[in-house]
Image 1: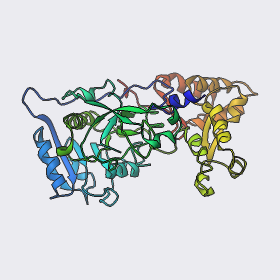
Image 2: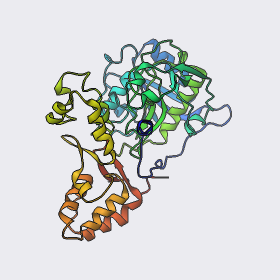
Image 3: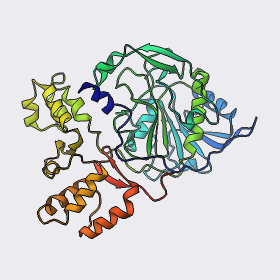
Image 4: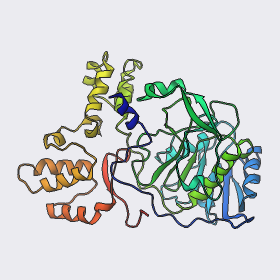
Length: 128
Length: 282
């Protein structure tokens, strides 16, 4: 009986066969080129953490813009391919952007704050 | 969550492109919290991990529950995170629709090379899902939840904690026998559903249907609509487990024939059969 627990509590039990959705094409760089994506980093403007992320990402991607997370509604994502939502300090106290259920820009959410954002949208990746 | 991802990365493009992720594996002592969850007592003394970041802390990041994470075609676990609060296998990095949650806490300068490469790949990978919001939202917990909660009956005295999981009669009856309640659900695992509390589907069982989440069960119910004796119960169950409202058996059959390849069942999505859009799967 006990070994069944491991099976049940593994990485998900999918009864009906589910493969992954058809992805849009990836944008990959040629040798020595930057990755052809325009990123928007929404975080704590002026913070060391923002500088850390943005300078790293600029080494690898065509374009990286940064905006303050407080006040981010998703509208600012227009003109960008991927949004990164992040903040410094205690994720429990950071601003919580309010995104609508219709928001569909590809987005990376980071850390505790990210899990709260996912939770507010009833995603499986939320903080529980 | 700590600094590490748990286990060997699965074969997945997110560990290959555009940067090859080459983890350095270590073996870390299995955290005590893992033992508290179903299956935890069977884990080995040490677990294989690889460092994503180097904060030296066992906290700071966050993992999501693994149970039910992959029960719909819009979500996938990319790596479990080695953590000190939840179960083994809890999700350190995972995708749901157009969102990819990176549960680690450190900025790039504190990531390992493997961590940096994995992060960059995640940014590229999620772009594939631009414009593809989730198909389901988290409405309920996976069916392992009543078993997990039953085992807490002695530890948590506040009855209200269990109100949305068990009836007050169950809480009374099993107060001193939590394993008995866990066994009650475990023995009928395929028939668990949620309606105000976690229940075992007696109607389904009375029709000799063994699971509430297989395509075969759905087919059986639709066939039973044609029999006078079983039709009322079959109709009730189709209402319970689908989001459709067809009138006639023919309409149900037509729907099943048209959607068969795209039907999935999600506990987290509300214990329902749902249909993914045409062309959704590769």
